[in-house]
Length: 614
Picture (cartoon, helix red, strand yellow):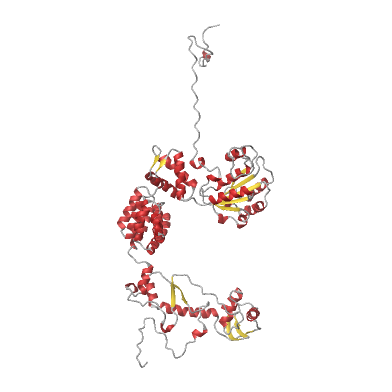
């Protein structure tokens, strides 16, 4: 055999030496294999509450659940409602652990403080417990899905003490699915517990709500969120400025999960674990609080170039125009609150900018001016959100605010009109009692019609006029009252005789129903005769005629004329007279005027001069 190496095996690795080498050196150790890095967990999952005491801002819920477990009165169905990220699903999982926990020794029962170490608690926290079923109703919303769920109710728990079904976003179920779920919610097996969660409680049928114990999880206050975020940031080795924490808490809008997601992003911005308010402001696309106050002050002062310059500065810093408008709206609301609650300027929870400059600015503005600004900015937000160029739309909002800054409010214009000022167009007289001592007419401009109080005739009084007959049916027989109002012409009212002419569209038994009503309300028999005589106008026609007269009278009043001139587009919606009844008619005694009284003078007539002989 040849001693030469086999060319076919030249690439094979040499065998590892089994002992010391020829010169006694030990064999080289293989390099250590690096341990795989643990996957990063976002803060919202890492710091998810594991017990009832970990839930922040939900003291009422925690107290009720603790008492229920302590007294053995745990409901078989819970309905948790609230905005996103306040802890609905987390609470459902805590309830599932509380129902199935067996304690460290394996002999424990249902408790409000699950141990977290027993096999049941560990499996539920790891989302692998066979008896805790989570179903997303948004993607499993049909009746077939609910039927599968009902089929699962037939089986006893496979591992734990209680089988828990968690239905998230339950309002997304179809009507048929809700109906299929109804019976199971009402009478579930003793080993079954339902926990429903929704952000839209009003979309959940009342029949479902009535079978559940409902808990409304509240938005977490900004101050509480700020403290929570500061504690978590310290655990993560990060330090955020107080203003940065306040911005995150405000942007979270009461949602713990949303706030933790923002905190996660903010910590990634910092250098050496420090995060400044400016960095968070840029991340959120916010404008500086002082800049927003400068912008609002310039707009309300009428300084249009200054307002547009401040808006451009905010835009250059990365602030979105829509966010700037929302900040303006928030500032207008805060300034208005300063008027309602003067002690607010000493509230340490408010940022320094709002407490100092905001309070000073609020002192120079009236509530009507702020209310007008609120309406304009609120409308402007809708325009900015829908506009293709949001910056241009925001500039238009500021232009409008600056344009009306020197204009009086509607209340000021009315005061000038009533006082005969320049705005009244030549000094219109103030409204007051109508000449002759009669009641004054009041015009409602751009306001909803005000319904008069319902008549309340005496139950046993025999009506002597058609208006009183019709009033007897008000509130007692609505359909009969409507026909009496529109389809019946009175001919004669002489108790106990009533003669009327009925229009063809009225029901055939109207006379009999009216006679029965009169007998019931007055305690005596009536005769209702149907006549072919023309009779008087219907009560609805009388009311329309009276209303037309009042409108003509009001439209000619100088004050109304001045208002319509100074408010383009305004319309006179209704005219009411305090002396009229529910049908817009004056009492018969008021309509009959003595012949010896002079006619009413027009509103602008000069007072008459009387001599001693008069």
